Image 1 (tube, one colour):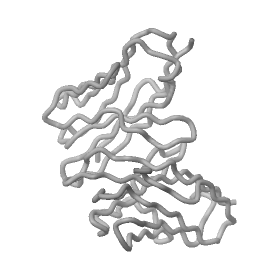
Image 2: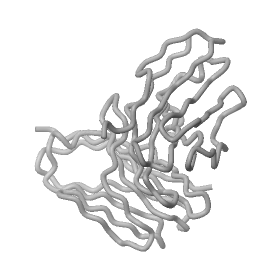
Image 3: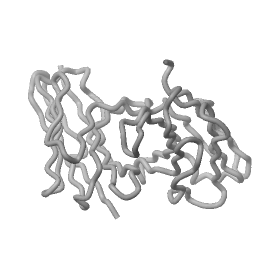
Image 4: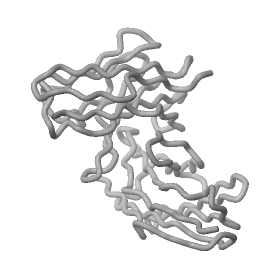
Length: 112
Length: 115
């Protein structure tokens, strides 16, 4: 059974700082990995999706990397802004069923 | 497109009552997912459909839960009878993928409280 862990559970940084969020998974036989953002009381918004054959994806100030062999992914946020404050979740889709297993998320606070 | 639409946004009911949650996926999306989110268990996949057919319902907690997708533009998740431990936020998501696991688009969720 796939297990997805996100550490730390919470992170607070000053505005402008670069930061890295971590996601680890136990079964490296994955189809893809997706990073989501969730604002309080809202649904999830997809940020980046990395296929199993890819090493990284970039969108604006966000860069996600994938290392299947070590069961790890990172989400790099450059020049953080208060508007980046949210909970970030990673989701791993398995190859057999395709359904995603979600981590518990990292709650990020960017202080002005 | 308006995105994934869920109704109601909030539901408060008493234990033992039937609860029906509704979802309208994004037009043209082949996959529809129902999730439940709680502080204790995080985000859990309950069931998902492909072209209106249930593919995997192994996440449905028990027989009190049932889901249907009578057509490509509508799905329901029903709880009968409801219990306090069913209190959670229920999300519907849809995906355009020709294969499983492609980008999912989430609705705003239904916040359910069972007293």
